[in-house]
Length: 144
Image (cartoon, rainbow, N blue to C red):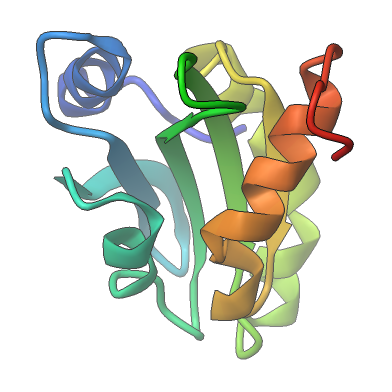
């Protein structure tokens, strides 16, 4: 079981969800290789490109982000994603616990449209994620 009970995590989640905050992403990581407590690594307001700069090849990390996109000139949508980052150099035992710990993270970061499994930075490119969000959203009037 992963400990996701930090007040910092809860506050960052509320900031990402809030229309009154510029914060549009947060990132969590384990306190250490041997401790299953997640801590807040950082937050930001520059989207997935900024979040990508904080992921580590040797760590499992959990991210949450607000994505804003439009289907046409008159509409704007905001959707939320959950990111499960497993860096290519993550140790076997830590990798083995990810699915169980993801369930614990989902209890706290619980409002999202899609889950993004990422193992390389290209998996966090915004364009393919927006395409998935459009598909998941149902009505798509632009042929996507």
